[in-house]
Structure formats: C-alpha cells, structure tokens
Length: 187
Image (cartoon, rainbow, N blue to C red; front, side, top):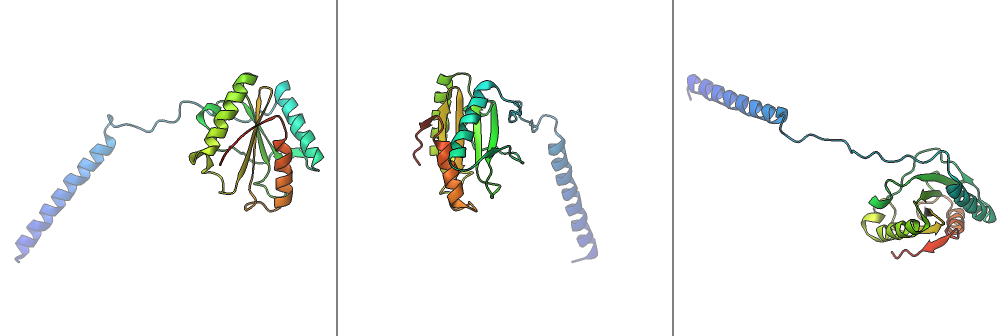
C-alpha cells in the first residue's frame, strides 16, 4: 500500500472519529435531554423532642426493657429501616437498646395522625416486611416486631446471625415486642 493511501485512510478515520466525538458531545450538551432532578419531597429526620404520645410509648418501651435488665438510649449514628412509602413522611423517633453490637437494638417509634391511622399504617408496614422487597435490607434470619400503642407504631428487629450477643439481643427484642398491640408478620 502506498504511503499516500495510508495517509488518506488515516485522515478519513480521524475525520470520522471527529464527527462521532462532535455528535456525542452535542448529545450530552442538548438542553432538551432529561436532567437528573433531586427528590422533591424531603424525608423527615428523627424527632429530637417528642410529644406526650411518643413519650408515653418511649416510657412503655423503657419499662419493658427494664424488666429484661436492658436500657434504652439515644443512638449515636443515623438509622432508617426499610419501610413502605406510607411511612416515609411520618414523624418518628429512633432509640437504641444499649447492646454491645452497634447494629443491634434499634427501636423506631412512628407517630401516626390517630390511633386508627396507626393500626392501618402498622398493617401496611407488616405487609411490606412480609414482601420480598421489604426484607432486602435485612438478613434472612431477621425477626420483626411491629405493634401499635395509641397513635404510635413501634418497630424493632433482631437477627441471631448478625448479633454479637444473641441472647441479650433476643431478650431485648422480646421485651420491646410486648409493648402495645402486636401486628402479625408472616415471613
């Protein structure tokens, strides 16, 4: 092949590559293309101060845990469990049983608009946890407890495989599960 032909092919390829680059750049810079828009709805953060109804539920959980020799504390880090869309905007407070494993013992208390709404939303949470999607953020052996007390929903979990002290974690889980009216969850 002559040097002229090699040069002609090289120039042709460079021109073609330049056109491709221009089209790709133009497609990326197109103002009509959809852009990534952040969520319009901000998620609520856990309540730092709680109203009387939530405080009564916290007191009931503390009492139940006291009977098991455990205590309820404020968590050091953030915690947000997998939950259905109906609970996303509910005010909530997060507490943690004082266990050795920092991933054990979270208790989420949601505040519903009324006692009737709490029952409906707790049922919604239970159905969500029964679904495969609702269990994706938990280990396969995780046990769930959901209950209602007045206009609040109490939620906690326990997993033998992921706990550093399964005996204490199960005892704390069982104590929290006694608070309020339990909602059945079938896995």
